[in-house]
Image (cartoon, rainbow, N blue to C red; front, side, top):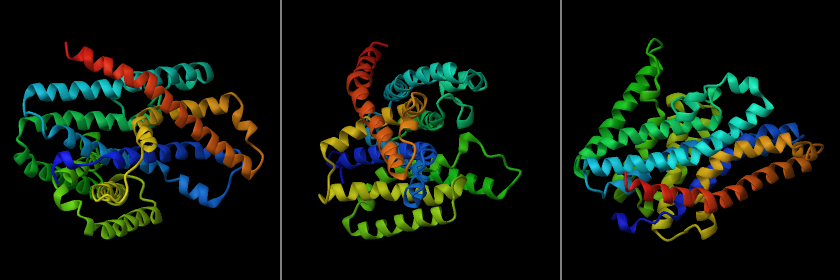
Length: 344
């Protein structure tokens, strides 16, 4: 399956779905405060953070998709990393500043106890120390991009052998650190890296992994992976990757298979939501905070129905804002930055 034949509308749809899952997860505590207690809502939204695992797999796949056809030179590596830095930081810093101002106004003591410098440069992955807690995942994105630079110094044929070896090395270290109490876990060989590299391997072996006959098997395996992870609440470490990370990989495979074989392809609206998913991911905590501080949460408090409407309202508000912000602010700024970057 050649690169030019790959269709990615469903990947954009998955980005949108993953981002909305994360939004739901963060709205859940407010839903419960508003009086919501419907089991199917609370038990479902509790796991919304798993959208991050889908993001990581997609990121690895897209990095391979967009770079493996590039010249294997230092210039290509520099351009790749420069574009990735623009994309991450230009989108992030605006919301970092807004959240910092909000905390300064509403809870200055909390702000002064956070890692401002680590938050600004995305060099701290501890969500409890960050101004914008969800930015912990961006630290892993940046680290993966840094590691990915080195792929430009190998041919694609060499990478087809090297990437599985790198993934096996990370897997071996992760398993060893899980069983050895005195072996310190580290950000630099985190099991989360396996999700990025799984995405890369999916691209490398796409000709074998995106066959139509595999679809029923992949669906069953995805259900088993997610079911097992939820049943035993495997939210951290290598066990999270073995269940929810595997589930994320399988979900991405499903999305690709059904599009490549013309079963379903996401429409323009879902693709647009996917385009703005980074904005949605970064901005929704701010909108949720505003939802609380301006008194809207109190307005929706009092009954199950009002709580559900409150949940849907703040999610809808977050989505609409992300669509507008991406189209009129983020996208134009990023394009100008790329144009400016050509002269650097």
